[in-house]
Image (cartoon, rainbow, N blue to C red; front, side):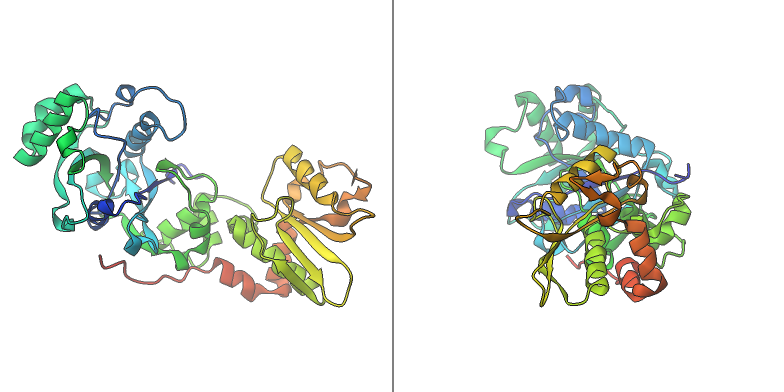
Length: 385
């Protein structure tokens, strides 16, 4: 990857309680991203947030929040906790990844918010306190006078009680977050970036690694001056020399290979939709007017041992008891390391490189289908909430 291209990450505002909706709306309107793991400690120092036990512990999340703002990231910020904001997300930068003056001195934001279904979104954020990255509670406390009286009183009460006072626990929330760089952010709709939609990550805050080409293509399409017509155009920016099939999401690859089976086999029909519902295969189909079925596995996996295991489990279905046409669609680089035969079946008889499938579509089998999978066609505007 080019040294000038920032890494990618995501933040999901997926609080399902309707009492969060005014806060989510306020964050969306102000192009902010924030997390909430309780009221106490009032700190951006991950060392004050306890031990690391799992990926999404408060300690890890606070650490990531500060790291992204310190080092700079391209961020996907979704606000799906609000039903009116589930159709897309912001893509933009934080910290020194931005292009404007505001990116040169990134700050964290302590947000004191009113909580409840009857709160007006315009009043949901009581006040914000900009703070240095990694600020400790002892560094924050002397600055609480910079907040409004309402916000300051609540934070002081939290500090005094070591958490939210019982009588106020359902009235306020303290969030930790940051502002997306003002000149470097835009809204993208899910239907314009189905690969981004399909590659959506769960959890609160984490690096976006798998499928991040979709986030890059969304960012460079909406925010930058780069000319992005297809998702795979982003590989020129990322300085990656690879087949365009790798620009697809996993679901799109399954769709491509399913369509390949249909176009290469007369009377082929899909019997179960491709996807994770099947334990050992991704595609289950059949051939009309013939007493045979079709099973296929589709993968971007590049670990040879995992490829071999997938293939062994798939070939187990081809037996005297149950005859089936077997297809295994995988990376070209992973065919050669495999044994010549598995369960008595020559690997070359069932293994089809995904790069070859994509090239066959582009060169005649269906270039229009590939264009539909990879085309970037932006819908203007953003939710009016």
